[in-house]
Image (tube, rainbow, N blue to C red; front, side):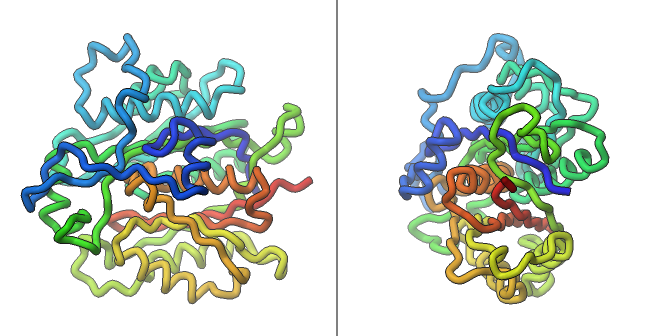
Length: 354
């Protein structure tokens, strides 16, 4: 059963709201800057960071919390994005299904369930904490959260639910570990990614909710397919790109093709500059070639903002919904994301049925 996307919110290095972020992606505006973080080669890391002076300060209710720099950045990014997604809603405590970073042994301050409270206070939005949860699954986390949100709506467990993701690479020990692994782009490394940050949220409801509330829906979320990659970034197995291909297969079994007019015309891709993910995309797209139109527009916004980590999937979903709502994609739109470890996921968004 499809669900309607009623609203979105985003805060990224290239936009303080959803409209600014989408416009920057559309016009290829980039905000990749030399940070004050040293790299292992004696230079400075290039990062995609939001301008600190443009983000709202921490709310008074959180001032006594001993937040790490990473948590502080995520609060200031995620608070306004969550508030934007709920700006048109009457006061009510909705569940939030939140994507956060995978656990990494080098990270001193891990991200977990505490982000629900932090975001609720920073946004000034009550949450249904009993039915909220976090997904520590990295880039694909937002799509995994979307899958559960669709299941909750189909089972009529909720009328509305918020799906999102928030992350920041502002953790010195984590950046050092990634740099030592040779994964960060620099003058020495070309097959690497630029670490970034960001937040995105989507408000979902069952089909027909927008009509009842006399408001437009942005897009329809038709389904999510999930896969697992045994040969992930930290595996010793030969990498054949099976995980993303299996996610595509699961998605297309769930959402059958509706004829040539229903072929995918736009892809929001979880590419981040590392060739590892390009290989997976190549394998998956070839195996599912009959589901794509000609031509297909490929969007990979990490070129503009860097890799936003666990916010990546949610940002891609929000951008897809924004594009569809404004008529820039008349056909179904595919969104996919792949995490450093096993998780792979793909989602299909479509224009709202009139």
